[in-house]
Length: 169
Image (cartoon, rainbow, N blue to C red; front, side, top):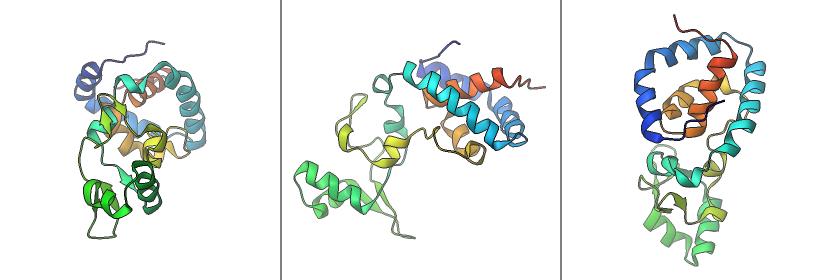
């Protein structure tokens, strides 16, 4: 299994394979979700250890990061600041439902390609790319969005095409 770790290459492939990936999305949707979850889990276990996310950091450069009140409090404690100060400097609250997001992209805490608060990073950051969660076929839109920006998602999806004998016709 060849692992591609060059972001420029996967971004280029994402553009070139847009129609193929749309067909693959439809192809996956027609398969048993439990079987797809098993395959994704197997590939995640094989591929993720081969990729050092600290050499990339692209998710931190390109994604909106949601945070919870508890995470703001934990971050404030870690930074030895008040939650109000942390919110004022780093957090934006959505007008509709009061959801909290980091107020910049890239993330404030990205230092080079590494997270400067790694041990205290937010749950959404810990979970990304969330391949270990069930329901992969229900998240195909998000997986395709991240296909050209996440080395792990890209490699998992490309290996899935091979293992499932997907042929874009």
